[in-house]
View 1: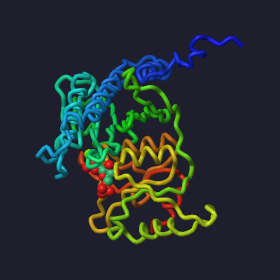
View 2: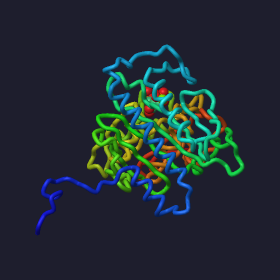
View 3: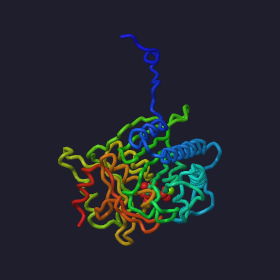
View 4: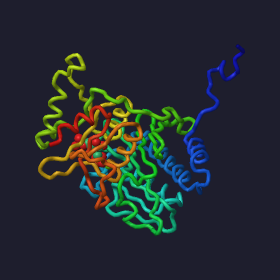
Length: 340
Ligand code: AHM
Ligand code: MG
C-alpha cells in the first residue's frame, strides 16, 4: 500500500484541539445554542494556559515564596496562588460570559458588571503547599448556568452539584492535563506547549471498576470515626482476591494529582470528616463538586461520610466543606458497607 507523506513522516495532521472539540460538541449536541458556553470554555482554556506558563517559569522569576497575605481559610498564600487567582478573575471578567465567580482565594463571591449567563466556581491553584517541591498542582472548576430570572447572586451557586453544566480540572506538571466534562463523559486533553493548544489525548475516559489502591492522609486517622478506621485497616489486611496481598497506599497530598491517578488507575481517594467537628477539609463548590461530576461521568462514584451522593449536597455557604470518598465503584461500594 502506498503511504501518504504524513504517514511516511509519522506526522498526525488531523488532531482534535480543545477548541475544535468544543465547537464540534456544540454543533452535534446543541446546534441552536448561542455559543456562550463554548466561548466561556475558551476563556477557561486561556486561563489554564496562562497559569501553566507562570508555573513553568516560577522558578526562573523567583515567584516562589510567601507573599505575606492570608486567604479566607487562614492558609498562607503563595505568590502563585495570588497570580493564579488574578489570572482567573481577569479571564472570566473579560470573557463576557461569566456573571458570578467564586474563588477559593476570595472571601466573597464576585458579580461582574455586564457579564453573561454563567457562574464559575474555582480553586485557581489547588495543592499549592506542594509547589516548592515541584509536585503537580491544579486548577479545579465547576460551571453553572444562571437561574432563569437571575441577575447574578449567591443563589446561582448555592445549588446542588447536579445543576452544573460543566466541570473539570487542569493539572500542571511536566505537561498540563485538562480533564473536562460537559455531562457527556470525561475527555482528557494535553497541552502541547509548542503548538499552544490542548490536544484530545484521552477521549471518553472511564475509571477502572476496581483497583486495590487507597489514597488518604493517614496522619489524621486518630480523628476518624471508628467505621472509617475499620475500613482502612481492613484494606491493609491480606485480600483473598489479591492472592493474599493488601491494598497499596498512594497519597500525594495534592487533590488534583491524587484524583488524576485515581481516574486513570482506579482505587479510592478520601478526605474524611473528623469525628469531632464532623467537618471535612475539602470545599464543596470548587473541590468536591467538580471532582464528583468527573468521577460519575467516568463511571465511578462520589459520596460523603454518610454515603450520600456528593452531587446532591445543597451548600449553605460558598466555602462550605464536606468529607468525601470518591473513585472506582468497587471500592466505594465496599466503603458503603462499613457505614453504621
Ligand atoms: P488547599 O486548597 O489549601 O491547597 O488544600 C487542598 C489540598 C488538596 O489538594 C489535598 O487533597 C489536601 O489539601 C491535602 O490535605 P492534607 O495536607 O491535610 O492531607
Ligand atoms: Mg487551594
